[in-house]
Image (tube, rainbow, N blue to C red; front, side, top):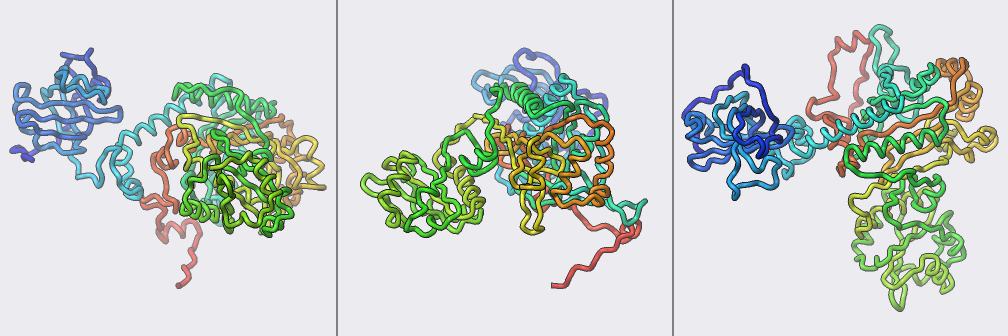
Length: 600
């Protein structure tokens, strides 16, 4: 590569003003004088000409240095490198027909450079700034500001911005008001660990970062705000997965004088508006609705993907007397048939067996249905009567395969539920470019915590039981159903909410069922209980998980790809090196002293 004979000096922007962005010019701009600014994506030296692909967040424009337009600029352009920041002034020209780039919005034109300014130099990036690069995610996160320059990452954030604008516009037009709620608040039990913030002015006391604005949005309903929304940061100190972050964003809404139908209806319209505005996709309203019990029965999970039809079936009664002891003695036996699935190799079946062990299964039983036999290590233990009953239940045909799971109900449903998705991926059963929203309703209100030996709220302690189920809180807590609803999209929970308890005596009943006595309730939630005594309206709401929703709409594999500066699975920011140690002086100001780490 030829080096410039001139020292490339960084120049000030001065009075230069950008006239267009780098994805804007076309044949209608030919012969216009323009000023573009951006980063050098590529430099190509064609002897007497130098071509630069100039990039900004909007796209690319090809600019060309020629001896006729400015011979000195052409000479200096030899010193330009990838990611240098520059501004050019020039004239728009039509490209020769054989040089048109149909893959670029600006592919029919180029800008002949009359003058340019180098605004900043750049080191060689640790990875190529383009979508085709294969850098490790850890390296991308360390240099996130470079990763975000890539077109796909830029597009994700632009899409996210448009989505938030669309949602805000809809809510504003439907009489919701945006209210900010505190970030430094009181620690209250809501299901996950709080992030705690020590108070310097009140030493020995702590704020908590909110897991959600739950209590504040209920207080806003007590305040007569009627319809509230907020695009809000939430914080949970929990173990992470691909779709979790310690800090995440919700689009939160709450409505007074509303029942389940009212909240679900406005949420459907909001999601339909979002898809139409951002993707020009029409979602059919109303969304499909199934109960929690039906979701578990048919799909094994409370967030089923309904884009494909593989369903689980309970065959416990069919194999209760089986010679196969595992089936005969199991609390629950379920099966799932895959039409044409007998093509699976033994290695693939073994891989699926290892996969279900993640969910507590000890193995995976299977049978391949052949023309004249059932091929499986367990087939010999099944009587002809049992085979006939199973075959009729699933309408089994030669070439099918059927998988079984037996044992505790939670394990059976979870293992087969996730296996169902794996099998759908293996056999290409999931339609592309299809979005299938689903409401799951009628959740259990409480669930038993084996470790603490007490009932805990499945959603949160402020969810109302169904009207006729209040008396069950004392007599049969496990049978009480909640006025709760989750919004599921393509097998992912993207929203959840409930109708809230809106009077103090009923809230006390809920606390009692959770083992929270009156003294503890007053200490932790006294402000809410007091507010409920001053004429609180019936109310309910829902929170959309914005990060997960945008991830699905953009077909990304992780929410980290739709968050500007995410944390790793260890809740660390490798770019800023957070979390980090603080000085002893800072700790003294807070009245804190750290314990020494135990010696290994």
